[in-house]
Image: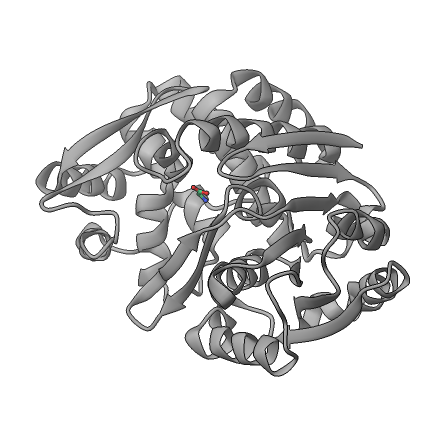
Length: 349
Ligand code: GLY
């Protein structure tokens, strides 16, 4: 097992290893003060892991309540959020009780936002079961729900008290969803770790899960400790996301987040990295079965970028790759971004 400790507004451990799910009860109980726990999950994850978690928490002395949403991004909405708050209230959850998020990013973000706002904040634990949630969304305290106008438009920064990444849960992930998480792993390598990139080139999807996940969390920890509230360095984590989010929107979410980020990274690399390095990234993404291009016209992608919530006035902060293992933040006028989209989408591969 590996441990990474995050020193943010709250100090907490992220544990990475096999079999951690069956230890959640005593590990959560060690925090004390908590009598009731609301175990939030989705119907897919529930079919694999709910019973084990529930039982383990009961044995550790918790009164366990469950809240199960339908699997998928569409559940990360105000209706699920209010239902969760009302369920907590109906069961008289107090400030000393807690929430545990068992699942991927949707479950984690929704649970975290409910934890941040119920009674102005109760404790929550993350038990991420997807690769993407392990390496990214469960760590760093970004919590949110989507609004009809866009993704993550209502949220809060609110850190979990413990993150348990049980690598065994990756065995039941659909292949496409596992690869989606791989896009985020590749992102970490591009923004800050050339050695990780080189090792992924050798191993492909067969990488050592425990050490690669721990390495990504370590990188995220360093970033979050410097910029918890996302006003500077944390934006590096958005590499590939500006175009990626636009691709997701243009596809009406038919292209999943990780796949869209892979396209975003490949297009950024194609226009901004020296050709041999862009080729290395494209090859690696392909090796992981990830897409590197899309059919949407540049104009449509640019229109979607224009409504990006990270836009400030007539410019946007873009993550610009300088080399594999090093990216910088650059404020870019929307006009320049438009030309970049045209270059990225209109050149052949
Ligand atoms: N997922 C990007 C961040 O946590 O800042």
